[in-house]
Image (cartoon, rainbow, N blue to C red; front, side):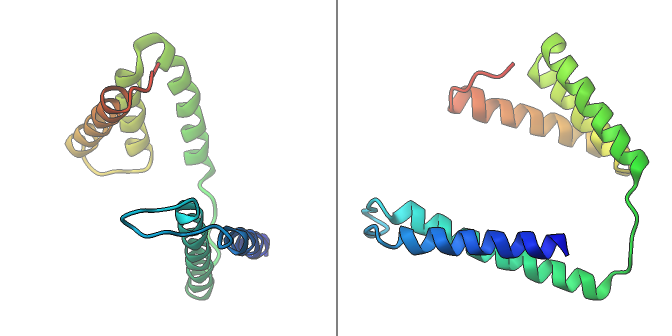
Amino acid sequence: MLERIATCFFLGVSLFYLFFAQELSFGMIAAPKAGFLPILAGTAACVLTVAVWVSRKSKELTAGITGIYWRKLFFIILGLIFYIIFLQIVGYIAATVMFLFYLFKVTDTVGWLAPGVLSTTVAISFFIVFVKLLGVILP
């Protein structure tokens, strides 16, 4: 019930935003004007909200009541706490590789090689994108 209310609220906010964003001139794709990004963002928000509503509706119809895996949730929160601590001690790349690998293993990912390679690849690629290309300072 709460999800349905939240979805309706976000759809209303998105439609309200889109309504006022259409007062700005859109321009063209080759030469966008002030309303290009707001109209695009409002439309995307509306589409995504409807997609979430449809997804929730289909899950309600097909799935029964499932429980929350409290043990996994506890270990994920514990991992986040240690990630914050290790981030200051060993740096971004090492802490992120360890944290992602830990998350893969907590969520029952099969094998050791695939989670290791994936966590290393994600951490290094994020470092390259944010530090080298965008100039963002990471811890």
